[in-house]
Image 1: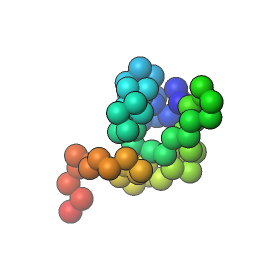
Image 2: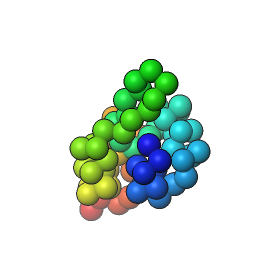
Image 3: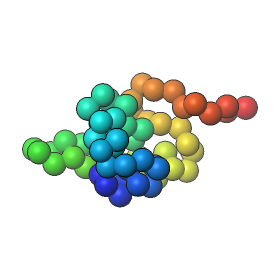
Image 4: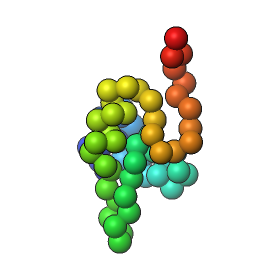
Length: 63
């Protein structure tokens, strides 16, 4: 979670806040009290710049 947040350019606290709001840009698994980011999802988001699994829209122009 911490590494994924850092790779996406925000703090750990911001990452957890986004998860709570359902706005984290990649797929997240909650296993008990542990939160894990799906590596394949993170890599796709970093490559494409398009969020997955959260219903938010990227603030980028895709043209």
